[in-house]
Image (cartoon, rainbow, N blue to C red; front, top):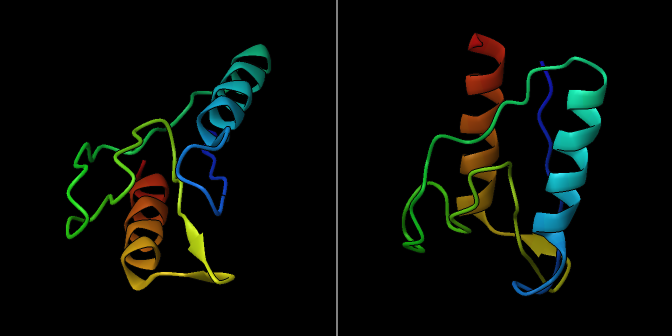
Length: 82
């Protein structure tokens, strides 16, 4: 099993490409990639970034918001259960 996350300070950064690279690398090593099963782009939802390939929190003033921390907790539990 493999999963990934990347952090950026800009919503239009290359975080999605980083996750794509991670998932290809995992496939090359016969690993199963675990994505995030939440597709919401609603800022009050559990997955604020809406990215399903992995966790993509956004930092503001070098701080990660509580909504992203909740999403990270959910993602970690999801991966552990799998």
